[in-house]
Image (cartoon, rainbow, N blue to C red):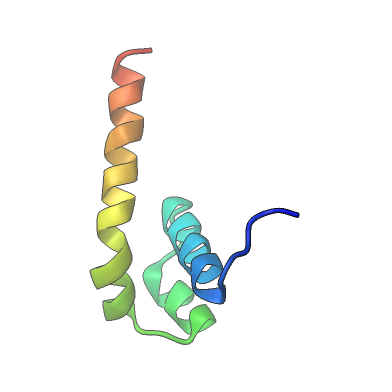
Length: 61
């Protein structure tokens, strides 16, 4: 019944979604018990890539 998800998978999705919504990294870090540096090193590239894809789609629609 559905796909098994790990706690890490849920955490990764949560952090990525919060960054996409514009929530400051220091708030996410405090909420998740981690550092801003870890979020910056791990997730910012994902967010930048996602924004690029959205902008590219907007150019062609």
